View 1: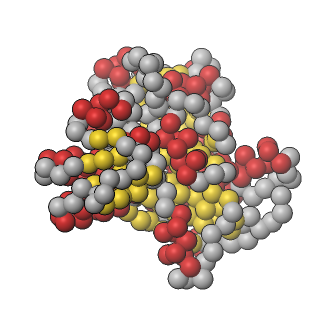
View 2 (view 1 turned 30 degrees about the vertical axis):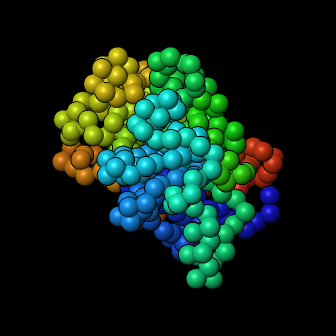
View 3 (view 1 turned 45 degrees about the horizontal axis):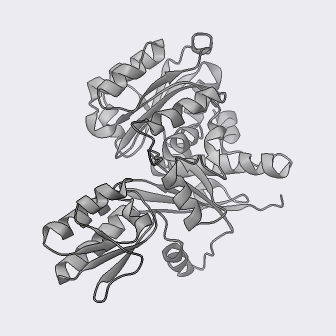
Length: 365
C-alpha cells in the first residue's frame, strides 16, 4: 500500500461521536480531531423539532443506536402525534418489529402525505464532509467505524448474542485484531447496517476499539507487554474490561455503566485479576457476562489497571491509571480503530509493515 495513508475513524458512542482523520505523514497530535454530539442525540433533536411543530413523523434511513433518539420518538407518540417508519430504521426502537408496532408506530415503505421525514443512521458522512470542507479538508477513501451492537436474529429465542460475540473473541485466540471486520457476523445487525451505510468501511466494536486505543498510551503499553494489564473502558452505556498481555485478551467482562458503582467496578476488576469472575454473577447483576481463556493463569499478573472512557471519573479514587493516548482520552477508541485498520490492511494486501500507533507508544514507554 502506498503512503501516505489517510483513514477517517469514527467512534460512535451514546453521547458523542469521536472523529480522527489519521494521516500517516503526521504526528497524531497534529491530525484533525472532532468530538461531536452522537447521531442518536442529533436525530433526537431533529425529532423534537417535528414534535414542537405538531407534525406527523416518518423515520427513514438505517438502523442505528437508540437511547436519545428512541426517547424522542416515544415522546412524540406521548404527545398524541403519529409516527410512521420504514422497517429498517424502525428496528432502532426494537429488533422485533411486532414490538415496534405495539408502541403505535405504523410501518410503511414511504412517508404519508404531510409527514416530516427524519433520517436515521449512525454516521452522517455528508455532514462531516460539509464541516471539513469549510477548513479545506477533504474526506479520505478509507473509513473505520466503531459501534456497540447487542446482536439479534429473528426466531433465535433468548440467545445472548452480545455475550456470544465477546466469548467468540477468546475462542478465536483472543487477539483484539480479530474484532476488526470487513464483514461483521450475521447477528451483529447494527454493525452490518453501518457497513451498508458506508460501503467498504472497516467495522469494529466500540469496547475493543477503546481497549486497543488504550495501548497507544506509553504507560499502558509498557505494563501490558511486560506483565499484563487490566484495561477498562467506562462508556456512557457500557463498561468493558479486559485482561491483556501484549495485545492478546485472556479474560473479559462487560456490564451496563448505569449499574456500576466504584465498589462494583473494584470488585469486577479484582475478580478479573484473580481469574475468579464468573459469567453467571455478572449476568445476574444485569451485565452481559464474563469469560476467560483456559491459559489465563499462565498469562501474567495483570496488576496494572488503566481506565478510559467518558465516565472514567467513576473509578477515580480507586488508584487506577487514566489512559490518555497522545494526550487525548476522548479519541482513545478512534486511535484503536486506526491501529486495527492498519493491521487489517497489512493482512489483506500483504503490505510491507505499515505504521503502528501502539508500537510507537511501546517504544516511548
